[in-house]
Length: 241
Image (cartoon, rainbow, N blue to C red; front, side, top):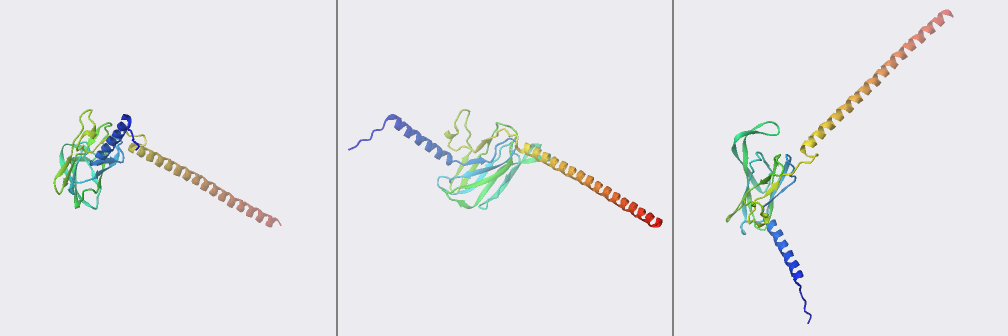
């Protein structure tokens, strides 16, 4: 009979792999947010994922709370859910990117399932919003997941130095990063520059066309003058004959 021996390092590696797998599984079981960009001041689409129900019970409603630094949000319509924006008055009015005064903010977005989302099935809900200009700021989006039986509040935030994976019900969050030169501001500047180049090219083409027309008209006048002189000379020759 062959006896297989396991050394301590092998057991340690196996245990480590098991811990990694459990950690990854726990993270994927949380309600999470996936932004398409985190650049400061940019317009981002945040996708929230619900991977399961409440201890086996189907999900009926998802309420996403907005950070105070995000006054406006545009929910994406999901055919499986109805959506409602809940607003509240601002203590002090704000100005949006276009200079318009904002007197209230969207405090939360509530999605209600037309048919309860069964446990073991996932769905996603997307929001469009402008990220604040504060680089390094962490935006937290607490979520209340309501089910046919019970509810789960995804609202825990890690303490200083604490790993988020240690939390049982962490709130979805993202950190605002520095915008690149090709970000939303750079893109606008580049568009303006291209527009200026196009206008200059059109002006140059118009000038060239004008010069060409002037030369053509001058040539035509000279030709007519030449014909007139030729006719006059011919007439004089006829009289002398």
